[in-house]
Image: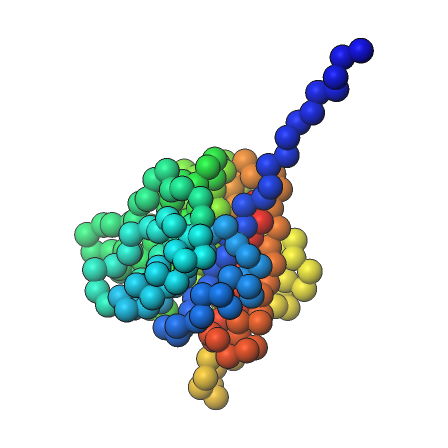
Length: 232
């Protein structure tokens, strides 16, 4: 008799994205409400909040952190991880209206990219830049997640998100229950309407992934955004 061969199943990597809205959230609440993620990507961070999050999350086991995406004091994106970062890159190009607010890190066999898009008329050049990048990465093991400041029903910018599907990307909202009706942002002004502007896309080489919409960050007043939790 020969022992049966067993295939060891790796636990999924859980990635949380949240636009903190420049608020400082207790790191223990961030981890708990975020589903105890392995990787946390936060957007709209000031220099001060970056230091606070890095110190607090390091005490909870998130020992690895990406570089800031900006050289100014506003709207940084940072990645904090329990898992080592094999690479740590940020987008940089002269005349870049995205203001370098886009990063990607290789973690294990997955490239994880976090992004915060500008609003309104500042989107044209950033969408052109990320579109070219998305073409080259569509068939790879890549997760692109972030605040795109774009609702899929927006007549002008919504088609940009949909065009990536033609390259081979999958929009995880498409397989999330209630995804078409979900919204992730509601501003404080009376004129603000609820919108679904936070999104997650996976490359074709990722065969199994799941998106969970974490509205508790928004409903509890910790942010004006919901969180997104992706398991790969």
